[in-house]
Length: 114
Length: 111
Image (cartoon, rainbow over all chains, first blue to last red; front, side):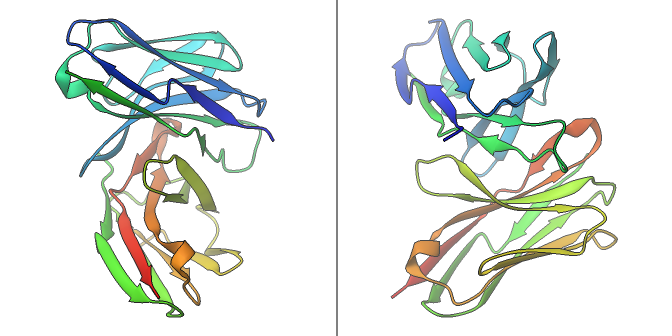
């Protein structure tokens, strides 16, 4: 099945460490997104990419960076992790050619920064 | 700035009951609205997408309606089952092709 996968699924790290979260998809979609979910705040957009050469900041990009290595791969980096970056992180994809540009989500990465 | 509100935050119903989940948004200039389901510790599963020009969409026991002018959407679940227990999220797509999410309604369907 065409899918969106995220690695790792769980990660515990310490303050100041560099962390990379990876997302890959076999859906053939051109658009990819990174969100974080915090209790009581809903999902918030960190970065998004509409094709390989396109990177855009979302609502809460400070402290994060991204890389779109290929159409199927989009990674999120925390250069120097801090405790308030503890959250559930989701990658999503969509197809700009589809009606509605429906987004499809990966299973999430639970990140804990001590 | 678009704000999306879902009421109630939590809901518990007996099996077999029909139920309605509500979603409201402050800016009616949207392209579409999407309903998702999230199981504990899991990702989001897209349930229904309603374009701004549509009034409703149906999939199995689910029916979603959209009243763009009043900034409201409802998700109707018929004949609820314990397997429907999950958190339901709505998200609206506005300018910049970005989704704005509500904080969800946590549904529990009891035997």
